[in-house]
Image 1 (tube, rainbow, N blue to C red):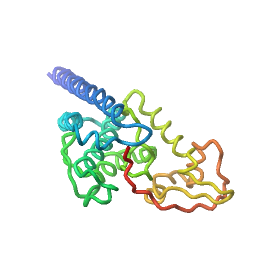
Image 2 (cartoon, helix red, strand yellow; image 1 turned 90 degrees about the vertical axis):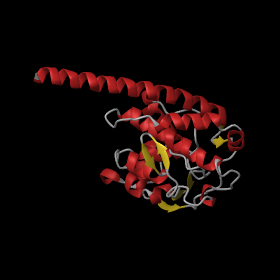
Image 3 (cartoon, rainbow, N blue to C red; image 1 turned 30 degrees about the horizontal axis):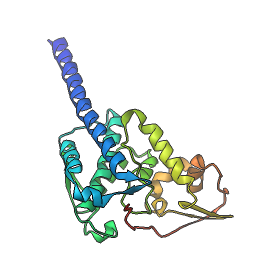
Image 4 (cartoon, rainbow, N blue to C red; image 1 turned 180 degrees about the horizontal axis):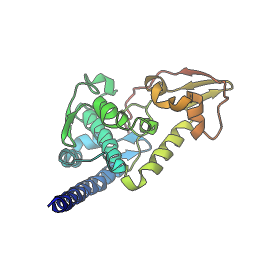
Length: 239
């Protein structure tokens, strides 16, 4: 009897994983098409989406009923990264035209969305569903795009489970090798306030900010560089 229960549990688990994979597979395909259509050179065609919102609305309706498990980390992370970026776009489109996401009250911390079987704000999605569950993954900060130009640029494709690690690595390298993002003047280095706000994510295991940046930067920073932060640019990343 115990063996039968065990086999049944395995079958149910496998069935749930299969259903979950089918749901996310369609979501990733449609999200990829959406980003390819409306994102170019790190900017979003909000006006065009506002004029024809059906594709975005369908994507988010689909995402409402999808359930993902941390046991499949790549699938889980890819789903929530794409969802964050889509919800940011949704929040802007619903209030467009605006000059900045900060012009919209409660944009990050008050407005709740029904997605992935839960109700969440953008801040909670980032901090509770991603950062808190994967505390050793600082590269999230280079793929979660807040709609401001100060954020690393949004890409014109979806993040996919089978390519996620490469995509995280690529976007992190691009950001940290961008002279507008890491501003070097001899021994003085100005960096984004992202590194100030989320400092603990970048200085784990005894490393400092310079060490973290140098892991990805081709032209290494001086070990004793004088680091300061430049003001974050919240101007809308509009096309």
